[in-house]
Length: 150
Image 1: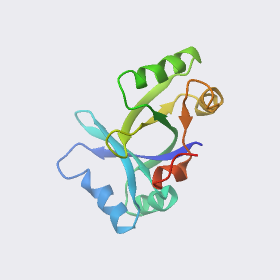
Image 2: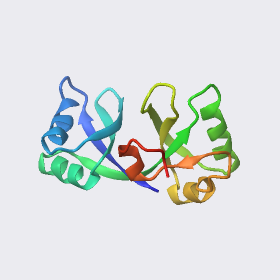
Image 3: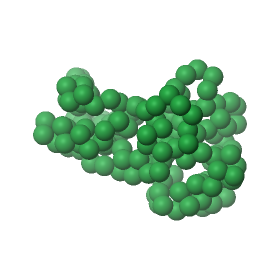
Image 4: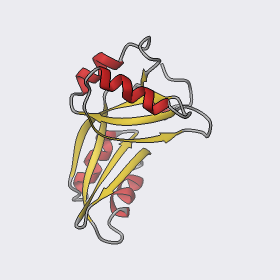
């Protein structure tokens, strides 16, 4: 249930974000979602890709500084209060969130939160029971198919 996220450090200059994206495209690696954060001198690009191992190797071969991080993909009701309910449950379980970002597959459906927890195994134990608070921890394969999550 843990996903491998690719994280790249990029110089904060025009055109630098397109370099790894072009590398992945040329390697035939599909991007599911991404997040880009910056400071004055560098940026951090977080990517969830369909084939993380192939993407990792292509990026390293191209000279990119790339690391992997374990993250979770959680289904969240795409309505007012949906994320607040998830975060309340995380607080009740003493789960520390380092960062998160979201995306939807189609308008009006559930949102998918990519969350980097301080302790992903503790988060899986706390959130993995679907009977608890209606939270669904997604499997990697479910991010890339059009069927309902397992």
